[in-house]
Length: 238
Image 1 (cartoon, rainbow, N blue to C red):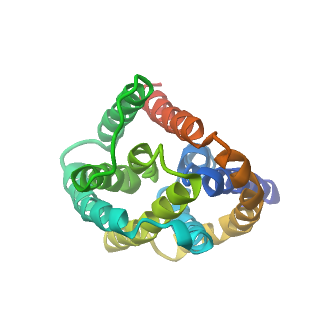
Image 2 (image 1 turned 45 degrees about the vertical axis):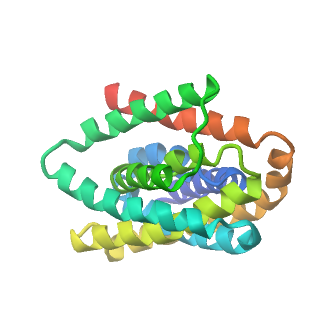
């Protein structure tokens, strides 16, 4: 990997981790599509490993606001979603699966904008966990389903809860990738390349988050979720 490639990865992870540190998710949206163009090996394992460190630090930073009950319900779905992803990928092309969930994300955003709310009930959290498990495993983009449920919560609650959910869920996904031979020494080294930019972005997000929290959390969440869904759909059909 050339110096220019390392600089590109650093800038990309810096911007992605700043976004995720400010609203709770977004690293996968920004980084995954461009990292694939540079080197397909960056997705999914290396970016998931980098995100694991990021979410650990975020969950600790705002641990006072974390919704442990919500994480427990969502994790039931996350584990099931990861297993489902492995099973579906054996019979359905990953591109088809990702496209379907991209469309579902856009539909959910449209319903939210129209006034329909998705309350974080136990049943809804399990369903969001399943969707997140599938998307996180096949495309390294697992934040939108859970973010939609918490869109009306305070910023600190959104960031800490999604981060806590990601910590456990990402470990499950990485374990699944390791079992099938998609997470080893090469992927770990690529994750280390992403680490400096991620840490710098996390540091900056501490100053960006208070700005977002001043009445801008829900619009920011819906905007990034919509962009995620649109990016997924466009990536698969173009």
